[in-house]
Length: 435
Length: 86
Ligand SMILES: Cc1cc2nc3c(=O)[nH]c(=O)nc-3n(C[C@H](O)[C@H](O)[C@H](O)COP(=O)(O)OP(=O)(O)OC[C@H]3O[C@@H](n4cnc5c(N)ncnc54)[C@H](O)[C@@H]3O)c2cc1C
Ligand SMILES: [Zn+2]
Image (cartoon, rainbow over all chains, first blue to last red; front, side, top):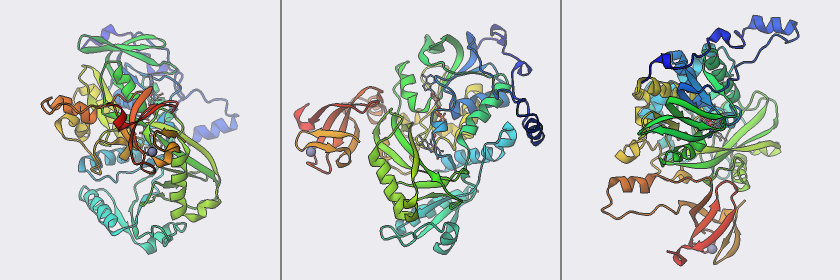
């Protein structure tokens, strides 16, 4: 690895137009001063010819990785290269749910690490991300589903992670809107993870960007990576729409576009890109204070602070790069919603959108080296990578800085497919349309 | 909503069909070795382009169809019964 002297000097943090600390006092002062004292939250950087680390993709994982590289490992000669404005990918399109109620022990440990990082994130970033641990509640509708959920909850509790069974009487109190005795799939009970909840998704991108930028990371928007440079078996940089940028390490964090970036170095990935939709209803008074998932069909819902019910279901079911979504799934999700919460029929859906998600062949993410030296991959997040942003960023930064996988993410390496160590939560096999 | 022109049943709505994945993956010879099988089972071209894929007409003739569809625009330009082409 080259010595630091060969790099152009990254700007010191105090040279940056940064916003200073946010506080109640500052809020009061700016309020009295007509809100004119605020400056940009992060510095809009121009690309320099060379960096120690280039991260492709200004989504949650790319920005978090950059932040932890600077903060935890002192590596500040870092650029995050984003083809559009930051935060308009899946980090700004998801339904904001965080939780760690997984089944596989290695997944529980990884996602619970993320949940613990969420709990202290706002203080650490000095940014209000509206982390709300309102609880995630999974309903079950059959005896075998009860067994399955019980097994998962026991697995979690063995690892010290909270999970509790909720009977029908408590359910009635917790979420009065549920039609427990609905004619199609009566509800037998539920499992609650109280530490689960929601986080304001955009604020996660902004908070990490601001904190990374203040530590010297260059966030370069409107800069699309069009090629990956190699020097023999090693990566040497990227081609972009704003010229070549050289780097010792290139980390791909492009979610739904992982296969396209990897194809630039002829690397086929165990990933398919599918579209996942989300929906928001008109605002109503508070009616739901947990995140609720229906167990007999594709529907989950939470209520945003603005009052809209934010809901979603499953992927549309076939490969797609179209960031929209089609009507059959919209109808299927609505039908499931009305089965379990018939009163929602009175609400108008005011917004709908889709995001292209990187469905891995076993349903688990990939944080890994690749066969090309210096080229790393953070991807395969499927429909669940938002909750993983703090842990994903931290463990990816660890991999970049030390060259070795973080112990909590060692099971997420790319070679697990060839060696038969896939991490398939539900044992569904290599069929992304079924995950 | 996709509309798929089934060679047996005519133009039908997407909801009658089930997606069955990338039709380009070719099962290697039994002696091809683990790398070839890893590629067959797990690696996908995942193109943002024309894509050849399987769709099962579950709500119709129950034949497996091979379809060429664009993964960005969702336009379908070819549909054939699996038995017709090999
Ligand atoms: C509708 C929906 C609901 C979801 N709900 C949840 C949920 O409730 N909980 C949860 O945990 N997860 C959820 N997810 C999944 C989660 O949003 C994603 O797994 C996660 O955000 C992906 O990581 P990211 O934030 O880094 O991706 P992104 O924000 O997509 O970042 C990737 C970035 O790479 C950029 N990029 C792509 N190609 C290039 C290029 N060539 N050059 C430069 N930049 C490039 C893109 O523009 C993009 O900004 C949901 C996803 C969707 C779509
Ligand atoms: Zn047919």
